[in-house]
Length: 426
Ligand code: SDX
Image (tube, rainbow, N blue to C red; front, side):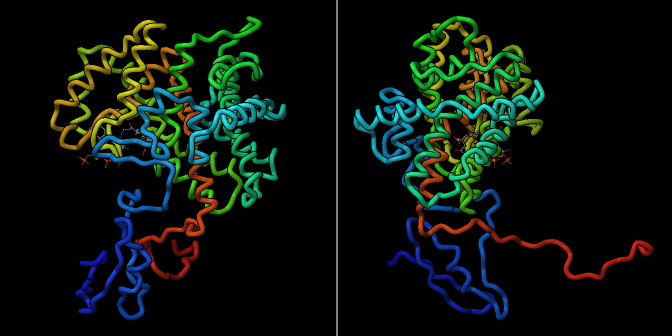
């Protein structure tokens, strides 16, 4: 037995051998299977449901077993023992940092949190009710105009500088977008604070000389950032890689990832979950809502996953983190509705047969709301957490000799050559 496929083309009677490598066949190996004069076979896979686009060593997921590992470290251990900046280092460099590497990394990120003053004016240009994800996407791509040297992506030191800038500035951009919406003055970064404390200060500080965040809330948000840090080839990572494959600067590639994350089927789901829970209103309405979902009226937001056909391991951890946060803030009344939804869905064949379980977005919104974030900020939090993962994927892409510019084929379904029709004849 060999690692290969024997393919018989019944149209011609010809036989072909195609190698199997790492559980895949190379789509290019199918081109040889051709009728006279045609370009040969290609694969057709809307949404890339069964297509590997790259080789990656960053994140491993086993959807059936509910396993998630960053560079081989189980998410459960990292959530319990690590910090977001340490996990960012791990994702970007492949190994946990030594203490001197971590302090250098922390110093570098801390000293890059400020924004060019022109970016404040840029953000001022948005309406007061602009969605913060739209502002974040626009301002990250605007950053590419402040750092033109970022286009020199083949230089490792330059990549490192832009990666550091992006991880450092995402919380500042997110906080400025939030403050703009409230008409509140911007709070500049405070280098005495940790990454998450500084983010909370830029969001919520008013006239007090020093913002003092509750340590338990800082820890909860740090864990949430860890849980969101990467997730292999999800929709937004695919967007970053696809745009990055044109060798554009990392700000433009990350802006594309933010755009993909914005969608309600992806990172926008956490905001949609909160709105859904509010709309349901009480546990009495849950069974009618579930009936509506089963009749195809709408999706149960925060449920289902392309890869996890079991409970999303992140959802398990977030559900536990809810208790820690609610100890400080008081229980979110929507938690009861969420728990009732989950209970009914996990017993109902419609969901069980489709292997629909709570995903990372189902409970995260409850914590974000308890931390006093408005729903429109939830996906901004997801984006801040996901930035090191996007950059680790981008960095891998840029150094992968096998990668080429992304340019898929299509199945053409339109008209073929026809004569132009003059207006008088239309
Ligand atoms: C994230 O990929 C990642 O890793 C993403 C992410 C990450 O960390 O980057 O994990 C983050 O995006 C989590 C997902 C957040 N999205 C939502 O919660 C939105 C609701 N979920 C769905 O839209 C859906 O489950 C997806 C988009 C998450 C996955 O979609 P798939 O894999 O394309 O599955 P599908 O749409 O083909 O669904 C299969 C069946 C369909 O029913 P049938 O046509 O077979 O009858 O399940 C149904 C779907 O209608 N279905 C749902 C459902 N999700 C799927 N029905 C009701 N409610 C849902 N939530």
